[in-house]
Structures are given as structure tokens and as C-alpha cells.
Amino acid sequence: MTLRRVLPDTNVCYPLSLLDLLLRLDEVSLHEVIWSEDLLEELREVWVRNGARSLKSARRVCDHIRDSFAGQEVPRPDHEASRRLNAWRRS
Amino acid sequence: MSDPAVEIGTNDDERFQVRAVSALVAVDPKSLVDRSVRVRVGDAEMELPAPLVEMLSAAAGLLARGDSVAIVGEQTEVSPARAARLLGVSRQYVDRLLAEGVLPVRRLPGSSYRKVPVSAVLSYRAAREAKREGIRRIVDEGVAAGIAY
Image 1: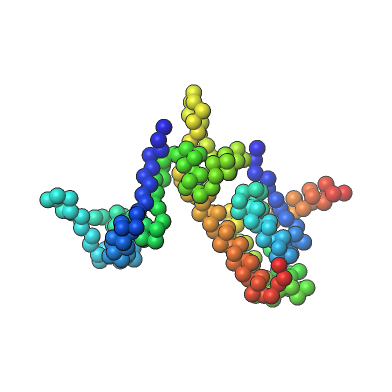
Image 2: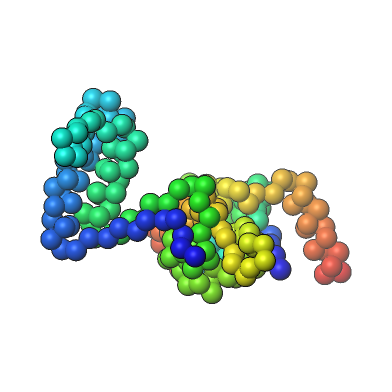
């Protein structure tokens, strides 16, 4: 049995409550959240575009994810492959 | 089978003395070269080397505030029960971490005993604390930005 790895979509990380829950479940090792620069870039963009956060605040949150979950980054090509796989599974 | 680890706590009277020692040896590790701490046992007296002064300073600080201290070698392996105590979690929680491969485990040949490297336990604890602090900052950032939870 291995720990389940989770690559969240941007809409899951968008609300603070879900982002908090997602990360806390990782903290207690119920799953392992993996992230990529693509995810953080998209998250920052939609927060700012929708007026949910200032650019400064969005950047700070992304920095905290980078720093605190440093060993769990997946490179961009891997992220893209996972997204295509998820899209294929949903189709 | 006992684990090669030492756990130290204090009572109220001892804590008072430990606070005084803590204040005396609470030195910046970088400035240790300028400070000397001498230990006398019977007629013999010698200066403590910097790593021991650093350890004494850290332990005294923790004991002074009522915390207990465990001294465990990084190469040491401990039982799942001891790992649970080091992490401040239940034994069942550690069993799950071992089953899911989050923490490495070594089974002793011909026995049901399992051993966990302390270095892995301490790394896991440090990573978990860093995550907890990061999540706290993310939530604080959201509250400061006026975002509804």
C-alpha cells in the first residue's frame, strides 16, 4: 500500500477552505499533494483576474506552497501528461 | 528490547535550577568560540567542547520551559512505539505511515520486531512542521486579504 498522490486542478485550490483541507490532509499523510509551476501560475492568474486576491497576496500563497511542500513539485512535462491522462479518463 | 535513547524530564524544583543554567549557557552557537564552559567531576576539570555546549544550551532551554528532552543518535533505529512518541502521535498512526511507505521500516530477521531509523522520523517531523507552518501562513494570508473561509 502506498500513499495516494493527488495532483489538484486549479478549481480545487481556488477556495481557501478547500485549499486548506487539501493541504492539511497532506500534512497528516492521508494523501500527498503534488504541484507544478503550471498549477501555481494558473491559480495566481485566476485569483487575480477574478479579483479574489491581489497579485501580491496570490504570489505570497504560491510562495508558501513552494516552500512548505518543496519536495512535492512535479516538472511541467509530467504535469501536462497527468492532465492529458485525467482528461482522457473523463472522456 | 529497549531502544538506545535517553529521555529527560524535570520536576518543579529542578526546573528552577535548569532555568538558571539555561540563562548561563544560552549562547549564540556562532559565538561559542568566545565562551568557555567548564565541567568539574571530583578533582578533574575540563572545558566542554562546542558541540556539547550547544547540546547543553538547547536541552536547558527546552527543560526550562517544562518540555522534556530525548537524546537519540541519528544512526539509531527505534521501535514504532518510540517513533510515535518522538512524533507525538499514536502507535496506530505510525503503523499506517509504515504500511504506506511514508516511513522506512526494517524487520528483524526471525522476529516480529520492526525498527525505524530515527533520521527518517526526525525528517518526517521537520517536514510536517514546515507544512503546518506553511498552511498557517496561507490561511493567515487569506484572512488578511479578507477572503471568506
